[in-house]
Length: 165
Ligand SMILES: [Zn+2]
Image 1: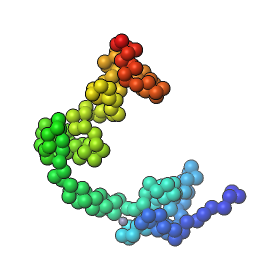
Image 2 (image 1 turned 135 degrees about the vertical axis):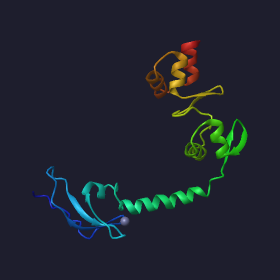
Image 3 (image 1 turned 30 degrees about the vertical axis):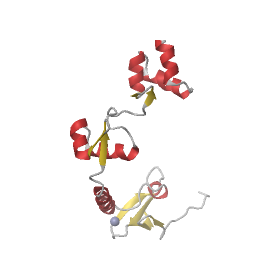
Image 4 (image 1 turned 180 degrees about the horizontal axis):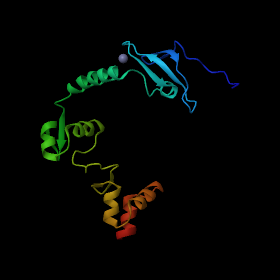
């Protein structure tokens, strides 16, 4: 035990202030009693503090989620586009069968609303847009095979020439 150990007492990590070090776990990972800004005290493993995976108590993080949710709510009527038609998110839900949250996130990310569910990265060739699994099915090869080809810099056009040419 030659390495000096930072005691962290009084240090702030997000909303946590370190109060005292609790007895170390059998695996020697360190645990601290911390107090959240709201006054709640919890024991937090050192790694969660240092790597920022715990910055506040559960009650405060729930509050924060609600605050963020309200912020999202303002964009409730954002316009969706499906096959060139403009519609509300609610209408797009009914047409596509996707969840509202999925539609909103696709609008934010600029992903097509008619892309397949769990689509993954879309590979487009000549106006045809499919994910790796889609192209793999079309060529009768494995998805892994498509992935390796794409990683080597081959285009879908080259694969079509190879498998269907
Ligand atoms: Zn709190």
